[in-house]
Image (tube, rainbow, N blue to C red; front, side):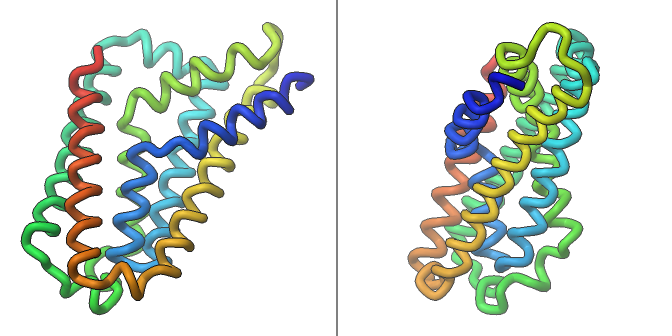
Length: 205
């Protein structure tokens, strides 16, 4: 664990880098309120913990080397991100503000928000590859399961803290965000970004 302080600094920088999870959390929060945003974050954290366990037990390397399984995960992730992106773009173009006026609480149940966060993270094979690429340089060659999990959970916890902050900031700015022009811009912008992530994942071999 002598390299843990260095890893911690590295993990903070990684957590601050925006990705699909950031934009999914942002859109759920502005459309459904703080509670739905936090449920989405809970799903993302759960997925990261599962991926961390897979990496720590060595199963992640097995899955990654099973090209068929990896490709199925990749294309499922592509389709899911593209679907969410198209929904967001369509909402921006249509200007559907009914769910926003009521905070969106009746539109997305807590378990659905959590599922959205979990699936978007778990079906992204880059997330698993990320754990397998980041952990080895920092741990000793004879590292046990406990040491590996300490590093893996650090990534999950720091990412969760960052996403909770995104949720709280977005909720605090809700009066501004719920203006129709701003809301439609956020929907369309987030949708385009998510479609970009889907396209990049589809083209990445």
